[in-house]
Image (cartoon, rainbow, N blue to C red; front, side, top):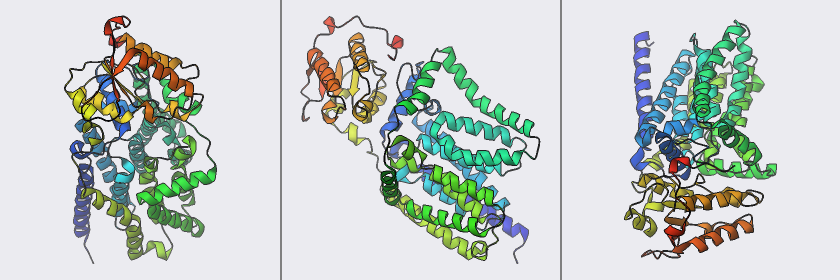
Length: 500
């Protein structure tokens, strides 16, 4: 029989190995080898704009809440350190919770969290908004089951952080939030609600004050919240949702963990007498992890990131207080854990053996990029139309776009978008106002939902710019201003405004 010091020593060794594994998986996405992805380049661009005194939703358009931009002010390595620290902190707290609740193999579920949140087929590297909200969800769960006197303050703070990082991810958090509030009724509910409100305000008030002082509160509301209900939705038949979700789960290696976790959860719900409310909350959280696909009508693999928190919490609720012999047995739990972790572990090994220092070649290896590297570009002197991957060029050259519109998917997705072409004309006015020298035009690769929009843009480009023959390039993508002297008077860059 093992003595208590022996158990404690093994527990410390397990924790150190777990944290080392988590750090190693984070190192697979440090800046030199991180996965190239356009969303992250956009976040980085807006982070740079913030650092230079610009204001999101006023000087640049995006429909994400603002917290991700403040994170990106830290730069690529700073963001990686923040990201890694948050994941390791969550791993530590989850391990301590598993050990405190006497979960066999307390390292197993925290390891599953790390394998899922670092699944290269889903996470797109570090820095995606849903990665952070998954971390916030698991932190919320650990605090909810903890005994810290300040836990309700921190839980309120995490709800606010989730809302201001990726608004739809409040929904997967809501079952645990409701559970926590119901549980809190037995102990001083007014005091608990006040603590949670204080935590919520600790995040939201500084953000609101920042945008309020810069007269951008309306832009924050319109772009980061209302826009997503008015435009960023698409009605798709339910069977099509199921097909797209199934395809993403199968391709990313998340299908097996989902099936195993759901089977365990449903079995425990049917067989168990106690702890059923927690299991119901955990099952609902898993189901709501697919809310982004259902709301937007789009199907992107990174929409599966919430599963990295919801699946470990579901399995935890199954193992916690289990009475059924097939769930209590330690060997069985190791078998379930192996089924949960085998495919994500294979993906981790697969990624680790195929790291590349050239993930940016999609842009950096092109003749146009190499040609532009030889130019002396300043703010407003380059505009990229309809290729968000090329936001990378703005970041590498250290310049800002002449227009707030740095990506253009909406002209392709929605036939009624920009009816009358007011936004397109605002782009044209910004290019003339800043006497933008170069335009990289990828619009021939775009299927404009409104043919009139294509005619408007092509007419402007042909009347004001001439194609540049770049050595080694195919069809001309780069255009140069015909006559800078004939353009409108140049405006100070800091005065650009988004036309609404």
